[in-house]
Length: 123
Image (tube, rainbow, N blue to C red):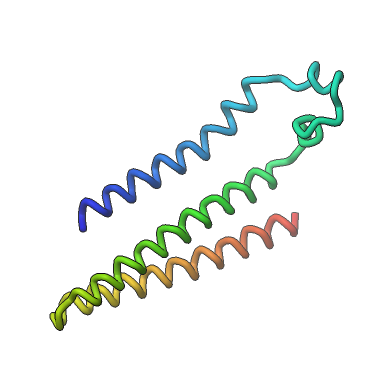
């Protein structure tokens, strides 16, 4: 179980790192002024003046999808632990806790998503 936690943590650091650092690398790589003067109707030029709220919404959406996938995986693992417990009360408790905490984490993630979208709409 410890190896699974380490793998999930490594995956999360990789995904979050690529999400955080990739936009800064692509924005700094190509100035759009000369390109947009020639082709102002392209998709890149249409989004040239986007504000930070679009980036925040995209980041929160990606993190919500990742967290949802991880929660589903943990619920499935908890189900397997519950089925394979063989009546052992410690294993049953461990499985129930895994499922409960995955559902609570999913609820917290949806509430965070709603709060972030609400705050962005206010400003």
